Length: 122
Image (cartoon, rainbow, N blue to C red; front, side, top):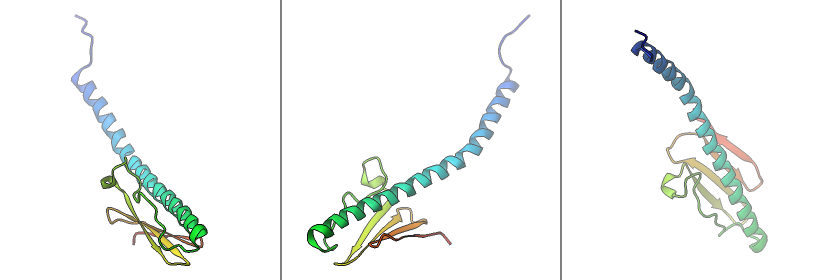
């Protein structure tokens, strides 16, 4: 009798191989997602800086400049924000800070002179 199909052992070997591949790929995927969130936060900070510069060119002060909506990145809902952006503006200067919503590092900041800084985790 010639039976066609896979044995239970063959199926278990395939499931094991898939599990090993998934366990190796998942951490890389998580790193990629984290990097994407950080890149989006820096992009949002630069967008806010442009809006503050527009405020300065119109009113000769950074004070009162706003950047809305202040979240980064999400699917359109502020509750899904990965970074919170805060603007500290004086008449002659500003600092935009992107702090992770989860409280983890890194923290990014952008000053009015264009200098950027990153606070790494200890």
